[in-house]
Length: 251
Image (cartoon, rainbow, N blue to C red; front, side, top):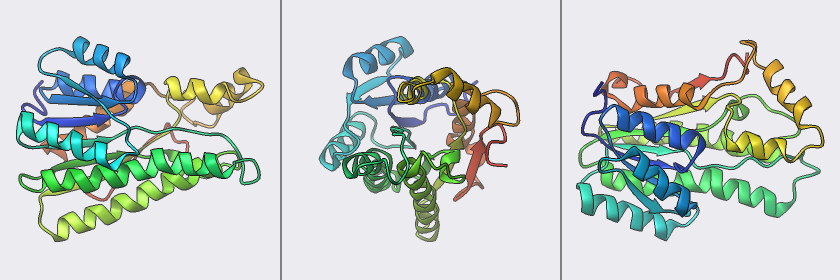
């Protein structure tokens, strides 16, 4: 216990799924957690259930002005930020011929622009004391699928951007590390939304399982545990790396 004792951690998309599991795990190990999400009701409930001094803030991660306000609220309450987890994201199915321009832009707004705003505003606060940035990408950012055109491109962008961020922060001697977690299929509400977009959800779920050599898809705790490691001082020598936690999906 206490692997991130006293650290101030911001987790986006924390009302459910991976974000909720990450927030829970960091809080269990002693972090002061700030949860953000567009779902106010679920986010407030999550903060109450975590207890302690967990705080929820309504947050559209595509809105730069809101990012500034979130960072200001964290500074006002805690005086610093030690851990930033850019987790909020969406997955829209479709090939290059199927995805419309608005769907393409929506995917990039939520999955990539949010990382830009999060890191830009987060670094301004974090560089005073150092810290750890964890950007949640996907195995789909490494291994392409014909039916995930926009998602493949967006998550690949997150991976490349994180490497650039790690270089910048390292060369600037900010004491900030930046790493990527690239999950495989994880049973979260996002998976349920993807399954709802296809005519045969059961067949797709079996396909997800078959695409992972380990023989099953992951649980949110599988990702929360690697984020905990990256948030902690145990990972002090890790930066610019991609941590694939995907049951062998990209092999």
